Image 1 (spheres, rainbow, N blue to C red):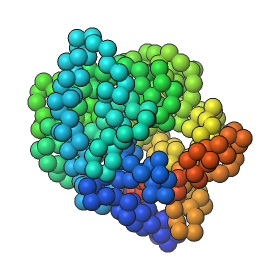
Image 2: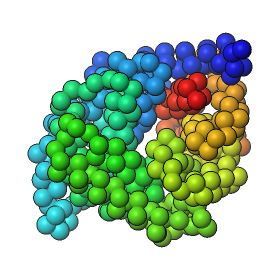
Image 3: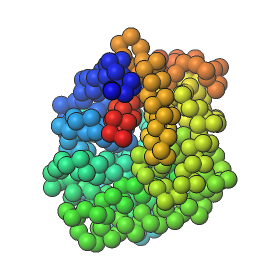
Amino acid sequence: MVNEIFTKTHTSLRDASIRIIKANQADSGAYIASPNFNVYNFSWFRDGAFIADAMSATGEHNSALDFHIWATKIIIEREEKIASLIRRGKQGEKITNDEHLHCRFTVNGEESKEEWTNLQLDGFGTWIWSLDEFLIRGYSLPLATYRAVETLIGYLGTFWQIDTYDWWEESYGHQHIANLGSLAAGLERCSRWKNISDESKTFAADTAKQIMYLIRHRGLSNGRLAKWIDGDGLDASLIALVAPFGLLANDYSIARETVDAVATSLGFLGTYRHSDDWYFGGGKWPLLSCFLGLAYISLDERDRAEEILRWMDTVSNNQLELPEQLEEPLLQPEKRAQWIEQWGEPAIPLLWSHAMYLSLYSALRKD
């Protein structure tokens, strides 16, 4: 008997998600975050890594590989810059935020010229994690990608302790747990690879251990993960450490408390980023509910994950497009109009939303 979550309705959204992602992948391999929202006509390492992972999980490995080749080229082209940053960092020289690697690029691999909150290292760790998932599924990577990863190991290992913006490109001035987890996930995974040097593998493994030690000793509040080091805030991005990164496999209590806190305080079917959100009025993000679904699978609560997958069908439009966030209920509805005036209507479709739907669908199909 076929599980009812894999019936025609869900298959339609799955197929539409693959189609929408492929339609918005540039010839260069870059994934445009959203085609109908000018500010998102770029490719982020964070979004792109999760999108590539979803595509490989659903069998679209050529699409994922094209993104990985695009990302590889960006890092290789900046090897000298990265080496200089590492040298300056080790010498204690002050480095401005915009001197660091940027978080988003044009589809041709160029930095955007407009002002942006670029200091976000997590995307590079997430990309390395997604490369390992790609390898686990039996696919191969070009040798240049291993070279790029070795470059990033040195970069991330040197700068992982600096303050950055969070996943949402906000809250500068902290060591954000979701960011640190992204770095730990990528560095721990690549420390097992055969195609990088022993020195790099050791450095990656040691750095990942240092990050997780810091998280476990200064990144908790009331038994759950906190938004940043020595803080007590709650942010839905924390769920990534539970799943898909799997960093808390040996810390069931922390994983359980974090998932419960996010689902209870920020939402289960539709999840707010954080309680102070005012971006477009602060709506619920479907993709964050998919992260919750992945976490529930890891906690052996498949029924809750299935409920989220069923709910995702209800938030797509007539074209089976998934939004970045829902229009209601909003945390700060009075703030919505000013964002629309500044940037236009919120993003739909958002490729990251479709990707997380695919990841949850694939995980449940496999489970």
